[in-house]
Length: 333
Ligand code: SF4
Ligand code: MG
Image (cartoon, rainbow, N blue to C red):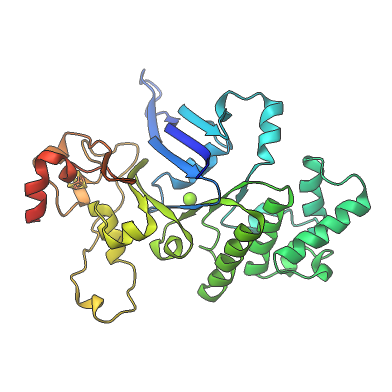
């Protein structure tokens, strides 16, 4: 299938001043060499604990945050070298849905004005009447009746506000939507409705999604492929079914054993308990950054950064266990 977006060795570092007198700048390596391709019409789930760089990855792709280095090719165009004017055109193609829709909706504006503003920014609809008609159409597409158009954000429930957030994103006719934890703040019952809405809009409009979550159970439902992030790196990347059938990276395994399993038989399996917190990204551990929390940590892991290994076609893992010469060690574990 066709590639919509290609991300090559993306790095986004944030400078921090450790001390006023220190000569060398220190950096938080929020995204530290992320590479993947996104195919038209697919959903890529990006999952990881908070602080792993998943939001920064999403925002860097949309250039809402300035990346430090790497390449971002959207339909072959190099996003990072575009002029402001070209970038504005591209923004129409790439939209974001935030975790907290209320914070991103102007409380003083009626929903119709919020959506109309998005249309105006991108020159959609020649007349007020045309835009009004479009607003009603979009509201209906996200499951809100026309009568909602003249209400204010505070008059809506959390789920309805997220529908408005989605409406604003689809209003301008994008091909890619980055959804940054769009259901994390919602009740479980509402989560399912919003996930279903994402899926039906994808079918209807041919959308491509990057769907960011901290919870594997959320991305499992919606994704075609999944990338697992840890401290700025994509530590495992695979087709969704392949990842759940054969998780390889110890971190992925840990995450999976914390997903509640409805089948009582599988509950009997030993659960890998993820111990410790995510390390301080200002001072990440040497070698494999997961090593202080890893149940399979070896000597080499403390000093050497693992490379990305394609274990099966399309299934990547960054872990020393999967270096060909360690296959024997691995099989004993
Ligand atoms: Fe664990 Fe070593 Fe693999 Fe890192 S490289 S996940 S520490 S086994
Ligand atoms: Mg986040």
